[in-house]
Length: 341
Image (cartoon, rainbow, N blue to C red; front, side, top):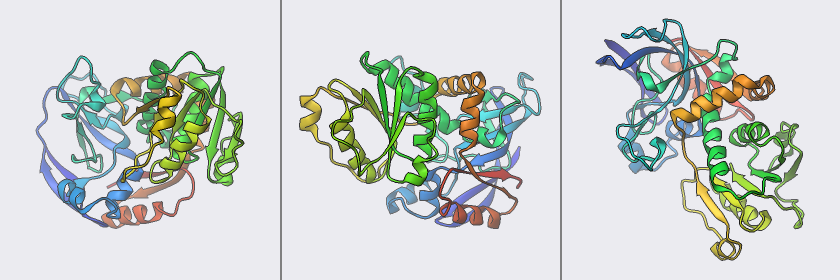
């Protein structure tokens, strides 16, 4: 099958390439429908990765958050027209201990391997998860990001001690909002505190028990467990505040990505017996749990639909470029492309 792949060849420049796809019996063909931009995509687009990384990974099709409609399944298991969330992580080996999203051998779309900016995606069938028909499709475009929040909270469940009284989230952006929304489902009896830099963004967290500006936190505020959802240089301050405000023996889940190393007060980590656990990406099981959570709670779906910021149809390379340029000025929410190339 001949396929059109829209690759970033250098910062701010896309080219379409024709690729011959080999379709195996374990593959299905999916037509992308809605694609959501991640900060990782914009860093590639604007050339904000190191020159070494750009040389190693480009040319490459961007986007790892997307839903699409099944066009063809050689086994006829997926019916044509079925909407599926596409899992970007593709494991090529199995390990009895290391999960698929942490295996160095796994291939992750839009990070060294072509993402979902394609006319059609030749997808291994176990990388497709059916999306219920009553889901808002714009929200469904970022189920991948929701699954990352599920991965983090699953790891928190497995790592933390028995103190679930207060869950603290540092970060008032998209990741913080998604994770906070999921906390209300996974830890319904816990008090949720959210810490952020912008009051205008914290106002969106109306379902949290309390919100705080990070430059105005009383020393006596304590959380049982914490999640860092900031990334960048802001993660250093967030981690330091978590160490200051978490109960001894608590667990902090680190989710934010930083291009440069950040400092951590290891003396306090050791003295208080804290656990710091890193989380990255997600697995098929996280997708399935995310969809199960969304299916069981219309309130959760409605809250996440509020995260849909910009939706635009793209039909040409210039449309794609304009969309990425405009995404950087979007103050709140996720940017979603209606893929019509």
